[in-house]
Image (cartoon, rainbow, N blue to C red):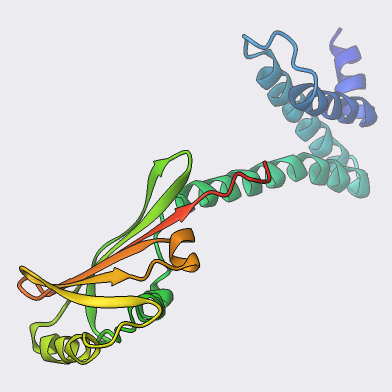
Length: 213
């Protein structure tokens, strides 16, 4: 029995290779006993057998075969690792708001407000509203010394309403009311400047277009 296992699990390299390939295919395409751990155990055991066979081949002088078997063994691990990494990145992106380099351009694009170069980010996240869309919530805090720079911009633009909207007074500072045009209906947004807390808030809503679903 020992000699038989040695022959087919170590010496005949094609047999453990075949087992490993079958275990991968079975794990992906044809799960046996899905409510058990059979598929995982099959992959692990066949992988260990393939590893042992590759080491045997290396020690016996068949370096090309040994290295090839190791390459076959490592390939699914690399692919699985890459998929896990991409999936984790995708999941993390669901919680991201605006990229750091896009904060200033987005605020200027939406409100014509040029913010100071130095500010503190209090919130920058994606908020899942419902199945019809999601929002980007942004709150930044500027230095008190920059308040004049910001308020002068707002006061100079309050008399003229642009295609983007217009600034209005509110109790603690200014609200930006966006214009009701086609672009803003597709991506409505709300912004305000609180001069008491020295914060600028921006909330952008993104609707999911289901017309082509």
